[in-house]
Length: 109
Length: 114
Image 1 (cartoon, each protein chain N blue to C red):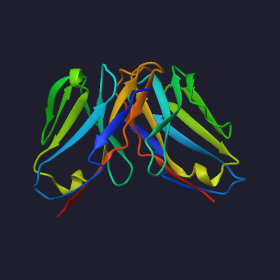
Image 2: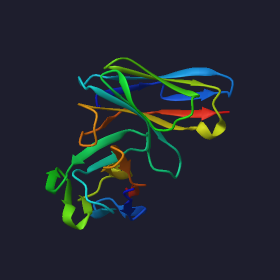
Image 3: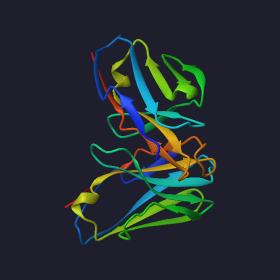
């Protein structure tokens, strides 16, 4: 089945820094979602981005479907950005959505 | 606030207990899901319901029993669980079932089985 790999697995940054999180997938996909899980477990859907670039405030995402990767950019990090960021893609054969293992981001005040 | 509410937030139960997790969505969606999130592992899909009918049972042990009385409510009934079932259980909904749908998650129930 399709493999989803996220990097880096862990990231510690000072408040105000910028970061780039990466999601690689092993097969062609027709959509991709980015989620943020806060320290209390709540998962928030950040982007639904099958291709191209989208922006939402300090966050933006780019998916290059032909090269099988997506990037999540966080600018001017805040402590509330801490948590785990997941990407998720459909497993076409089994009609399920597969999640990566996530990038754990810790923003220091 | 995602429009998906789960209760309780935390649950501790013994292996012989019977308990239920509840999920309610206020988004008018037709599909609801249960996911399991264990430490150090990716989210695992457990069950999918579309218009109150189960459309996916991802090889989940029978000690987990889902129930979907209507399109807004989803339950997960638990009985004779094992310590390895301790995990965060997440409910999600989407407009319709399918892999091209945007998922909305609840806050989860942190379950500890003693």
